Image (cartoon, rainbow, N blue to C red; front, side):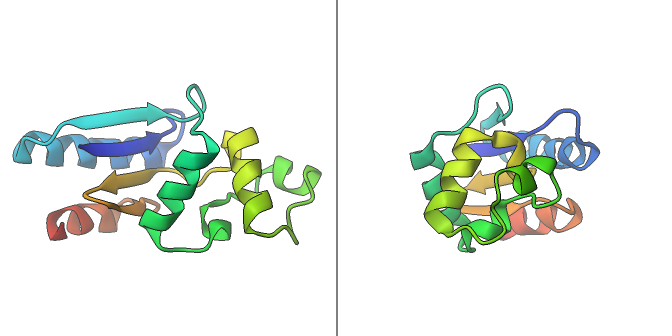
Amino acid sequence: MLTIYHNPRCSKSREALTLVQQFGAEHEVPVQVVEYLQTPPMLEQLSALQRQLGVPVRAMVRDTEPEFDSLQLAQAGEPALLQALADCPKLLQRPIVSYRGQALIGRPPAPLAEWLEAR
């Protein structure tokens, strides 16, 4: 299963979705599209996603969103950042693609096709 955490209002996310769908069709891999603003990932899912990404939680956070400042997350630790992502999914970087136990933040989307092929 190939999963993309997607925001249809984001042009970069739409580009990544096209790449993911093409890859899925070419390789007969089912694609799961999670519109994370409609169906926010739970804390456990976010934690698993962070492990798949292999990056600090801070790398998953959109720190340019007004909610980042209003929630005073600049000095927050990883547990608080994960909870903030669960509570406010708008803060999640987009898109995130998960495949075969690994994940990639698909922004910019250009490296995504190469990453998928390497799996």
